[in-house]
Amino acid sequence: MEKKPLVYFLCTGNSCRSQIADGFLKALGRDNYEVKSAGLEAHGLNPRAIQVMKEAGVDIRDHTSDVIDPDMLNRADYVITLCGHADEHCPVISNKNVTKWHWGFDDPAKATGTEDEIMAQFRAVRDSIKSRIEQFINEGK
Image 1 (cartoon, rainbow, N blue to C red):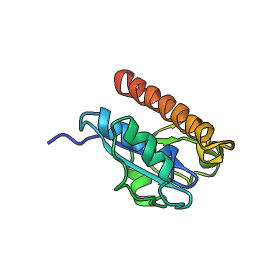
Image 2 (image 1 turned 180 degrees about the vertical axis):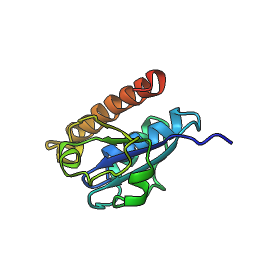
Image 3 (image 1 turned 135 degrees about the vertical axis):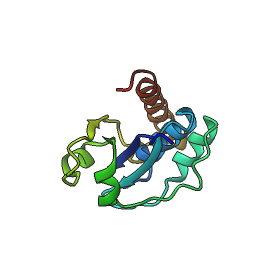
Image 4 (image 1 turned 120 degrees about the horizontal axis):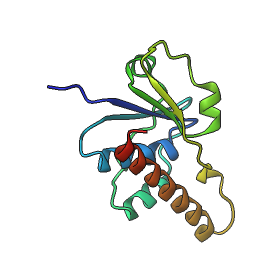
């Protein structure tokens, strides 16, 4: 059986952006990838991220918020950071064959305003991440 490429999404707290990316690649990648996500810290799964993904037809409520696993990091085929802090503070990757990318997205958890305005930020980030995941699947980059 052919090994599926391991895609490891990293963010600061593994609560929003990396969880959204993880959910979309699992849903849209047609089981062609092994998908994991983690953070420099584990902040817990953001309830608004669960809600906006449910609206998009993707259930992430059983995901866990995890800290970066060095073994997983070093066997990943793709390491993709979704926030500047994770990009700047990502642990050293000893795997020389890894493809490392930074896809920067605003942190919806830092959105302010009314609940409608905050949810609009979550939806905008969700939709941007979905577009980037579709590009990755279609173009491999």
